[in-house]
Amino acid sequence: MSEEKNVSVEETSSMSFAAKFIGVITSPVATFAEIVKSPTWFLPLLLAVIVTMGITYQMVPMIVEMTAEEMQKNPNMTEEAMEQALSYVEIASPLMPLVTVPIWSVIVAALMLLIGGLFMGGSSSFKTLFCVANWTAPVMIVTGLIGMGLRMITGAMESATSLIFLAPEAERDSAIYFLLTQIDLMAIWYFAILGIGFAAAFKFTTQKGLVTTFLSWGVVILAITAIKAAF
Image (cartoon, rainbow, N blue to C red; front, side, top):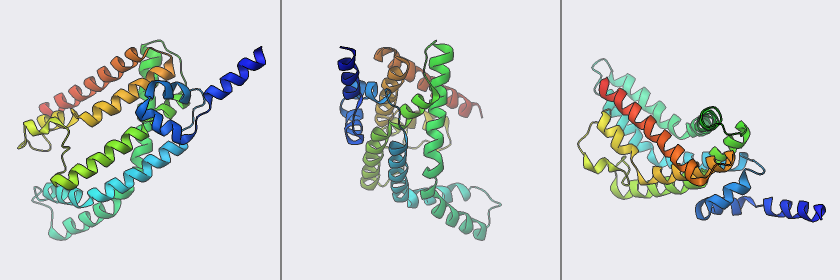
């Protein structure tokens, strides 16, 4: 009888990479329950890095233009220095996801470990949480591709799914600009998926995971907005 149970557990725990990728989008609760049984992170991280590099490459002209606008505000910036800096930005920007995507996963995993373990009394490992952070990749990829398509249509750096349309003339370094750009449909989807993964890792209810993740996100946004407003 016990042998039959062991076989059953192994069968329910086995999901292919493709099944997990699709499942995170279509059935995240069940899929993350399977993912945390055998935490793996390399393939989703690799795919997220590659796709994000491609998306960033498409954004390079906008990034260069935005950087040039900021540099022009500096009266001490010479024409030659600006050209050198912009040339560096053009080369370095598409390569940045090699560093930023893994670092983001580390930060997210560390915060989940701190909140779920220290503050909420749950039990999970950094490896499992790092796995959860990286398995948000399907949503990051889909939202990134949607954003790329919208940028190609609108020609604007700002997300077409955020609330920035409420203050189209806001300065990029202002508190209101930051706040409105963070309230974004794509970001809401991402944090919802992250909350489901967080719940699965700690064996919390899905509702508890979602509430915790959205509250944490809200606190961070409000804190950064307050700092920008103050300075």
